[in-house]
Amino acid sequence: MISHIDLGDDALGRPVCPPVMGDPAPGFRARTTMGERTLEEYGGRWLVLFSHPADFTPVCTSEFLAFSRAYPRFQALNCDLLGLSVDSLSSHLAWAHNIEERFGVRVPFPMLEDPSMAIARAYGMLPPGAVSSATVRTTFVIDPDGIIRAASTYPMTVGRNVEEILRLVAALQLTDEEDVVTPEAWRPGDPILVAPPLTFHAAAGRTEGEVGDWYFRAGTL
Image (cartoon, rainbow, N blue to C red; front, side):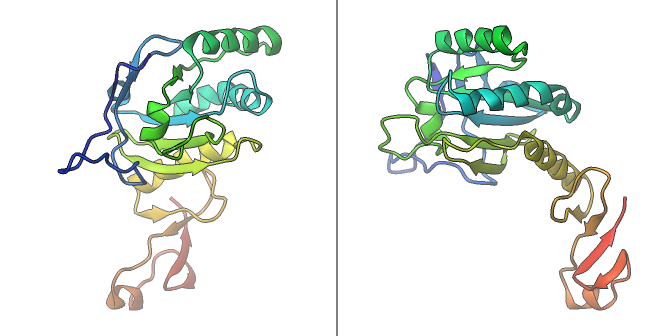
C-alpha cells in the first residue's frame, strides 16, 4: 500500500505534469520487499528507478537477473537500484523467491509495489487514462540531489540493456566531475571530448585536445 506520494498541484489546483529530465523526481513512500522506502532515503546517492509490466514474466525476469548480477558494479558507482511494478508486495516476494530458487540468483535490491499505479502515473510511466501496466518498462536515473538526469522507455516485448544503464550512470558522473562530454559508445577509460567553446574568441584560440576541429577535440583525463 502506498501511504504517500508527492504529485503536487499548480496555483489553480490542477495536477502537475509528469517530470522530465532536469526536474525533481516525485517523492513517494511505499512498501517494498525490503521494508518501506521513500525517495528521500536515497539522497546523496545515485538511484536507478526502473519499472516493469508484471511479475512472473519472461522479459522482466531476464532483466531482474541482469540487474541482480550487475548490482555490485552499480554499488561501486555509488548507485542504488529500485524496481517497481503495479503488482502487490506478496507477488513481488513470491517472484523474488522463485528467481532465487529457479535461477540461483538472489535479488539484492528492493522491489516497490504500486497497485494503485500512483507512482507509475506520477513519473509519467503510464498515460493518464491507462487501466493496466502493459506499457510500463521505464528507467529513470536520479542524481544525489534528487534530480532526474536521464529517462528511457521500452515496449513490454523488448528488454533493456543493463550494461548501457551502467555506462550511462558512469558517463553522467564523469561529466558532472570534469568539464568534458562523452562520445558515442564511450566507456570508462576511453578518450573523452573536450567541452565545446561557447564564444567566437574561445573557438578561434582553442588548442587543448587532439586536433579535430574547433568544435570537436578528443582528449584523455
